[in-house]
Amino acid sequence: MSTLIVLLPPRDPAVPSQEWQLPEMPFVLLDKSGRKERAGRAALAFLPRASTTVLIVAARDMLMLAAVLPPVKGQRLKQALPNVVEDYLIQDAQTCHIALDPQPIPGGKRMMAIVDRGWFRFIVEAFNAAGHRSLRAVPVTRCLPTPMTEAAAAQPAPAEGVAAVGALNGMPAPTLAGPTPLVAAVLGTVAQTAPAILADAALSATPEPTLLDTTEPRVELALARGDHGEGLAVPLSALGTTLAALAGEASVTVYELTGLPGGEPTLAGEAVPAHGVHVGVAPLPFETLARNALASRFDLCQFEFESRPWRLDRATLRRLRVPIALGVVALLVAVVGANIQWMTLARERDALNAQMTELLLNAFPRTTVVLDPASQMTTQLEHLRVAAGELSPDDYLSVAARLDRSLGGIPVNGIAALDYHDRRLDVTFKPGVKPDAGFAQRLAQNGLVGDIDTNTGNWVIRNGGGQ
Image 1 (cartoon, one colour):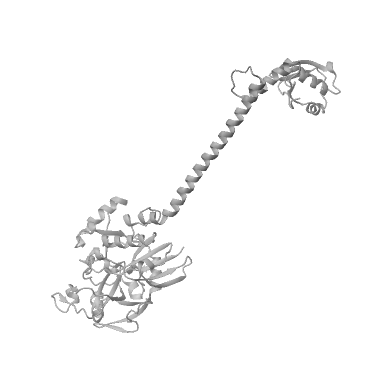
Image 2 (cartoon, rainbow, N blue to C red):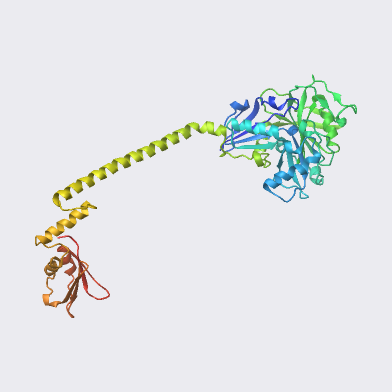
């Protein structure tokens, strides 16, 4: 089965929900064996179809938290999650979609990804309407490489993540520095649609909010620190300063997404100054990012967004209206054809019954009631045969006469008794008289069937051929 991996653009908080649109998005199409078939950039309507579609969600569109969850499951867990995260959010927790990482982290906690429900519903419904029924959504921070160094391996596990205030409206909160290595990925430039306010005093030259220069390009930055992840957009000139402020004393690994169609800016091979921290930029091919997304087990499509390819909705019914119509027409044709054939056979049956009734009444006009013409004709013929002095094949005299012809070398006085009942003849031979081996064969030649009753030792002879 083929797989389509698509990199989603971040949501612009300056654009209202009624004006949301998806631009051309980079994608890669893998066949069932994992080999790349196609790669490029296309609008939603022109993306290739695949058995499974994996969406890479921008880090700036979600907030990742670690917390201890109540011991409930299913719908009750979904109802309890907003109460767990409401203290970390600016917007109403009921308007957020909360997904759980299937892999627990140390301390009995679970990692949660929080995304605006309206935006996520818009994404899911747009892809469903375009024919992508089997959907998975993966945070981009779970698709970044995780290089392990000796220093990183010796460091203890990270503490609980700090709340990112306002992460859902496009502006992440400051992250406390820790010993966990920081992995950063530059995912491309950000299309500026409105003046942006940088509210983080740690990233500003003054403690007051500063209006950024909209002419300077900004880059999309995805940050991963262990299981935690976040994203933000920073001016290109402030990239090193921002990474230094976020990393603190931890080591920093910076990647730049490459291999994207469209001529994205290139930082690979350069060194980004970061206040004494020398940061080398390594290339991160888009195909590598896509394969990491395919291997990730963190699926944001949970609860009401869980992928159900078999679910019937208006889009599915529109695509299936022709096969459904053909099936209904075929069913109607089968039902009508079966009824026509039944009526034809019923007419033939009635005609045969009428013909047999007419023949019976012509032959035996005294018949007053006709129930089964064939059986009544047979009975009347037997009565005529008996009245004419002919023997019926089932009569005692007929069976006894054919038995006499079948005795062969058995003497007639060797028979001790004959008992005729239920149209069968029980023959008792005298002691010492035993029929030879050809007796049964001679009975068959005369239209009789005979076998020995094991209880009495007598021969039971019946009419077998109808002579």
